[in-house]
Length: 388
View 1 (cartoon, rainbow, N blue to C red):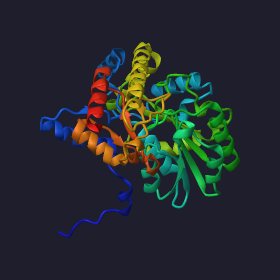
View 2: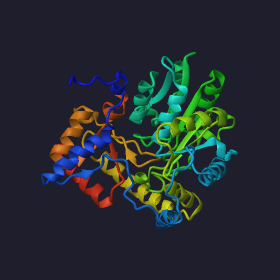
View 3: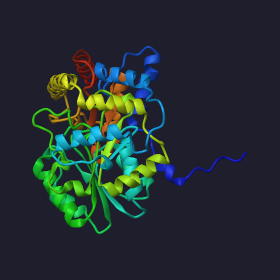
View 4: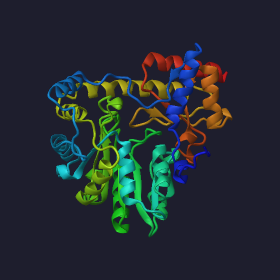
């Protein structure tokens, strides 16, 4: 049989680097190496007990069958209620699409909107799936630099200079992966004004919206008038430590929701029904576990920022959200990939090269502090030893 010829568009889809590095780290562990995992973006907390109990009850109640492609009616209502209260904007259930994880909202929304030649502005450094999906859809990726010197925020003048008559969509992410930066209300208002004047959609990825430290979360969706042209991406993975449950959602204009639901129905059919019932409990039940988790993340953030800034050749901006630090490592004299490889092999600490998140990530590495304080201290010690 002749070698198979695969579709050209598959070249746009790489394995997400964090999972690739995780696989390498696991291989070293099999050989007996101790590896401290700072590469994976996953809370190390258990899903709250009330949410787990709700899932078990839902299975017993028969929520084990197909549901509507857009999500169960009661789950869409709960999300509409939550987003409306949390963002201060009226939301109806027919604006809500529930998907198997937040990535599906990125994928389905771009499939619904982006045609070959359409330009999509996206953050660089940023979550790698943005650029991969733009390319997969045949769009033109337009990187928007996030720079250390302004807290990894957006320069509005530069942002506006990227907009053309071909701009179809802009992706923003606050709090950010990988930098931990957040956007101020002034910046969000500036983006909304530019988007409104030029007539393009904004996909606002707010998956880390509840993991903020020094000030309340500013939502793009809350900016007056923004909801008319916005796809709000959120979900349960980070806030409720439900990464393996695969439960994300998007809130968008009704006419777009209809099209996204069509794509969902032709790909994933629907999101797991008992998972959605558990998601209702997560939103409506007690939030004590979330508060406790964020308090612990804040303590870890302070610990790792101080520790990283004591390392020779490192300079670390203090993040205001998510659970990552993105230190500048140019003082080490090594590239991002060289240093990440050195730390894995010599220190037994798995991190991600900044270039995993785009070309503007050169000179940085991403370290997740979703591990215990004890492990963070041990990792910092081992990194210091390797650098010496």
